[in-house]
Length: 402
Image (cartoon, rainbow, N blue to C red; front, top):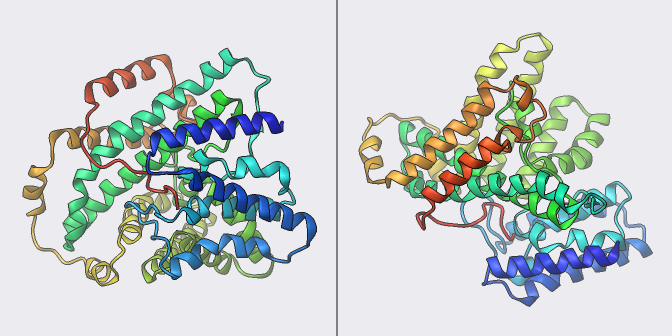
């Protein structure tokens, strides 16, 4: 087991070094050293609540200004000491809470590819007993789909980022909707790509997205979005709080913890309170057998939540939240955006619409992107990738290297 994990760690180090030439040897070794140190510490001492110290370590670096907030814009730290901190600290916190952290966990918790963009390493299951042919048949389509999401749908959408400067209601809503599609294409795309890649290596990692837009309410949405973080938050915060406090207090605790993991700012505090409140409201409505209002509320919650999430300037955020109307000049500004970016926007919108409107069909029910992994879908995606490949837009991971 150790030899195979070490081989995968080395392959991941080679891959991330090839993809990100700005990384050096220190970026790879420091997380390995830190995770090894905590494995030693845990093996020798019983440290009460150390999982919470680890989880909030990224909050401390954010508060001190060492790391950027994860708004969805470029947030990579140049400090080699902080490479992958948010991911391996959360992974250790989760595994410690489950009494599963030790020396055997070190290589997969500190795997360079996982630290580059996630998911959080909740598990790292050896599936090398399955033949290479079967692994290729199942996992390679994930790589194609993930690459399409990230490269063809996501990257060209960065051409719309100038809209964040506008504070009128029309511009703000348009930007928030486009930015939601961008973050989904970027983060989900990279997550699917890594899921497929590690599958080829002989290991199963968490599938970090489960078609979140195949949802009937915001509760189901969050069950499909960034699933590895959701699991950590549920174990560390929701379950302990729910034993002693009301549902609303437990949800507030979960979303404030999530907000602090993303960045310690007033904006993220508002984001956490906003989502906790509507999550609670949706639960209440569903308990009253009102399923229509939660599904109608879901687009509003997602888009307004993304508007708050994306904004790092508090003064500008409050100005946006006044929802002032100043006409439709934004549509004239959009004429300057390259046509390819609109094609990417069309693809992104279509993918989300397919997830939502066909959520009850048989091929969608497992929520594992099977509808995009059929031979016909793979052929069409590959052709579109070849035809639309370009250098347009800014390439980075929204949850990268922090």
